[in-house]
Length: 92
Image (cartoon, rainbow, N blue to C red; front, side, top):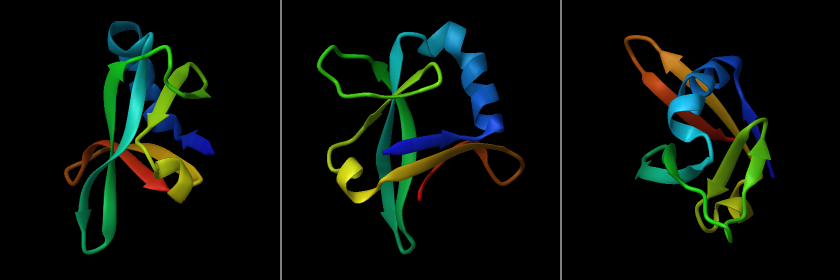
């Protein structure tokens, strides 16, 4: 299992790191299903002692149940334009 983070997404996470996410986990989850398949999202949550995490740089990621069996890699980007503003999570 690997998680790649784009430079744009790292910049946004670094902005949030000191104020909001230090010592917490970023959960990757399925946010909805559509004609093109599932859409994924990120959620911030408290880091539990018994949670299995994936450490990428200074960030702890947690996956919803079953995602690690179905998807081996994820790519995280950040969009900031008229069409999309926010994190984009894509399985690879």
